[in-house]
Image (cartoon, rainbow, N blue to C red; front, side, top):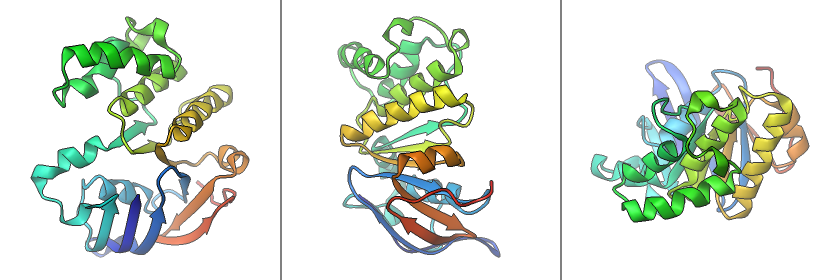
Length: 227
């Protein structure tokens, strides 16, 4: 599903990633961990082709990301859902409209939007909030909207970038249970996190990055880094 082959990213004389080799299979749930500045954001930006690799090859499925033309980048990104720590909802739009926006920008029909958005809202447990605005929601509810928006176009990969960072512990676990449910439906999930307790309890694969290098890859690992 995701393959990095001898990938290096330099920022001038600074190393973002250094000779990274890894594979993440279809349907896996993987934690990407490491101290601040380790290279986690570089990993995500390279996969999304927001930045170019200095050397090496990156694949998403059968698509080689590194040699993708600018014209084909939007199609690549439609296959990758993203959930952020700060939700990034549009404040002037309702819950329904925020989720529908992800379909609208790829020119889905109004009929499809009216059919699919309620299904996504039901999946994340906020159907009754469809007509409310982000400022009327709790942090956990806002993150559920963000997740619904990220999966509305059925991406094969979901990147969750510190999705519990702004949430209290109980709400954080509600979001994790939702991510597990999405993963069980076949979506590959790569979750970037500093949440030691979550990583330790989940017992999923843990890929550790430090100073741009993969320093560990444990199938049932624990968090070992200082933030």
